[in-house]
Amino acid sequence: MSYLLQFPLRPLPENARSPPFVLFGINGAEIFDSLPTNISLALVLHFAPKLRTWLLPAPDLSSASASLALRTPYIGINILADIDVEGLAWILSRMLQLSGAPVLKEACLTHPSLLTAISIHRAWTALELPASGIQALHLHMVTKLMLGLAVCPAEIKAIWNTFPVDSPITREMGLNFIRSHINYEYTQAEFSSIRHWYLASRERTHFFKSLEARFPEF
Image (cartoon, rainbow, N blue to C red):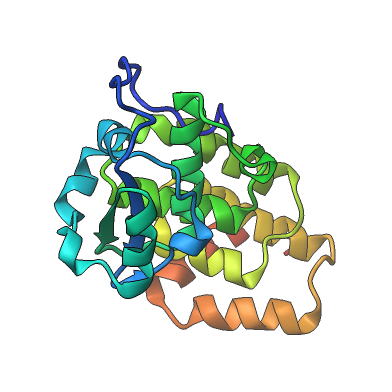
């Protein structure tokens, strides 16, 4: 993970590993059971100042959160954005890693799936973090699309809904689909589902047809 997500190099605050710690929610849903509970407020605000926008006053903690706060000082952050817990977890784990705090072995995996990488991208963007910090993540996605398995319908739709049509990631997704069909890597049902989906939109049809035209064997 260390090479995929890069934050600007700035000295950490002295209290980067001290309480209060943060309990996170997304759009009102508590998710702290799925995230580290030892991540300092000072640390997350150091790396992602946007999170200050969603700070909750202590009385707004739920009963479950408040019971934790009785033992250790906690503060709530309710992120009001279209992200999911998986992408946020990767970003928080990277923050902890940079602070020198221990992180779970699973959090150090360096080869996220395409759907996980999309989740990370969306969370990174929602937190208004520097675009340069996920260049390696995008390169990882492009490489998987160029050299990896056939892109599945869920991945195709997620990439299309996340990245611009002229993005290298979108382009490689389209090329992966065409190569995979030529190489008989889709069932007839999978191919029909994908083709029906992109033919339902003029923009998608133009994108895929322009790539198909380069492959007479398609």
